Length: 346
Picture 1 (cartoon, rainbow, N blue to C red):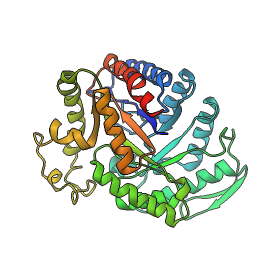
Picture 2 (picture 1 turned 30 degrees about the vertical axis):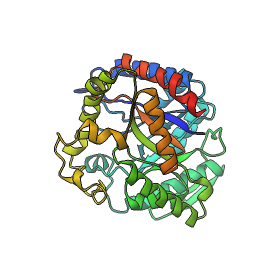
Picture 3 (picture 1 turned 90 degrees about the horizontal axis):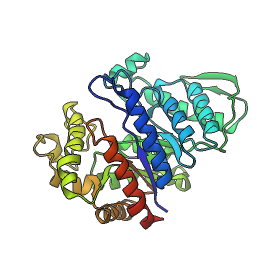
């Protein structure tokens, strides 16, 4: 059965002064999502951002745990190399106990130089640090006492308390390159896609991920989690005039960072993106194969297409972004997903 998660917006531009209000709205949105049938709530991580972008994901997830009853609670994506793996093991164990076994963990490299420098990390051996951290986390979940002798980490006689409630924490890797996709398959984690690439690119990577999962005897663990910006409404004018400008603004933020013209975007399959102007990034060109949006019928059709063409196990829906829509509109969208979309897939 298809599962649906919601990725929360944690930004309050321009200077983060409205963060207390945003957190209250986030908690209300999470509570409603829990009630109407979402399967999970997920939060991101970044540091030193003037708009207050969430730097402490486990703190917010613990607050959400207290306001929800059934949804899974996880990160999408936290930056694993910036943490000591023992800190992560302890934080996730506490969250799992607070939520009575609902914790999940989505991790990635986050190759952002100023954030890595903040924590004294460079790109040198960052993949080794990342891989060793995953190995240590799994030891912490499976063994009451363990030691570890790696290139980066050396640990002796470690006991993580409290013990997790689940047998093992669901673990995903956020990947948007061939090496990262293959790494997820080799390590036997789920694969979380980015929301920007079109469906054909995601399918290429999903097939590659499943192939490498099988190659390393992880086929049964393979899980493709599709990240998509999304909106459901019965008002087509709202979709184009109110919602789309906020999504375009969010996408063009990555363009201004050089994301579209850098090697981080698969320009071989989408050569037009490399030199795309702001005007090129239009509703009619971007929405059909990159976003899930429209009437309940449109949204259901989009989801079915991604499910059938890519083989998606779960979709993480990002409804609200820094530029909007607002809290009231987001609450209505969450409720409409629960009433008109989810029943089709249950």
